[in-house]
Image 1 (cartoon, rainbow, N blue to C red):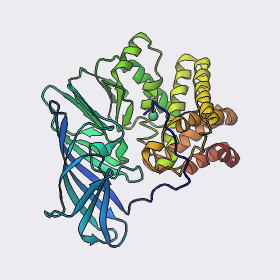
Image 2: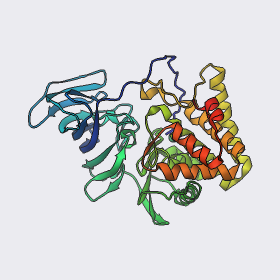
Image 3: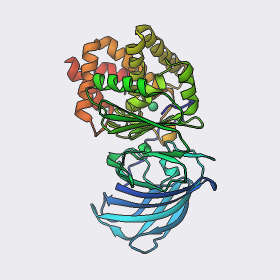
Image 4: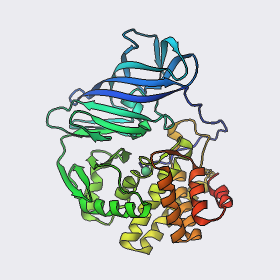
Length: 411
Ligand SMILES: [Zn+2]
């Protein structure tokens, strides 16, 4: 995703919240959207595993969802919903490693993470606005999502569609769960074994295929899904999800007249490698998603349009970062002091991240830098990562200790 406004960062020394003492293994979700009423009726069964002995309650993120009922084994436990948190008392405490399920019925209405138009509904980043969930990237889970589409609408969602449900089959941070539905035009083509699906009026198959090939070659890892869907929706959405990207329809119009304006298309597609394929372990290392996606989009533009275009994009990132630093808002790329997902965006992970990667590339040489990226990608596919993992891959490729450089930029 791309944050459009720079968020003011709280100057706090407090550490990030502690992990919740359970892990969700699976969300089984059924959504019934109502376009006319601008609401979604939802039901989720959450299967979770206790990480402690005597887990007495479960805290979930639930935004401003209206919670209609909670069931544990056909009984209604005591629950409380305030300040965006849903706390459910378990009937009896769960033992360490014990697996339990909770079923929650709820109603979702328009919120930051759930956008309604008369002919479209889509989600964006804040999964707790449409699904009661542990909405932190350190709690990765699988998803089965059934959506009853309103008449005359097309649907796209995270993961693989099996004819009934959308399935995210490897454990994934909930912010990468998403869906869009609406009265969209649809087109598909197949490129190198991948179906490129487009919802909305856009002619992006050829450049998307070009980006897909470039990233597969540079990262050493082919696109991992069977389908990649881009949805061009109303509004300003720019959001990656598993096998899916939501983009503004105004961007499709821009591309029709300025076909070289491929940065955003490439940035979002890069997240299929760095966000979906390799996931930052928690918000502290969000730059590993956003810095890499920003830098790789710049590298794609270099590949397609030449060195001058790359330099122009990198200098833009540098300027945006230096403007932040001039306001006293610099911080290390690795940022363990976040309190809330609202604090993790802004120019630092995106633009300081991209500029650092360009500097690393310049200092290590092309050959070593890309070898390091391929090593990082191969060794960490489908696993959560930290900045240390990235540094180790680069150390190995460079045959030297890069800790001084990483201390200056990252830690
Ligand atoms: Zn992004």
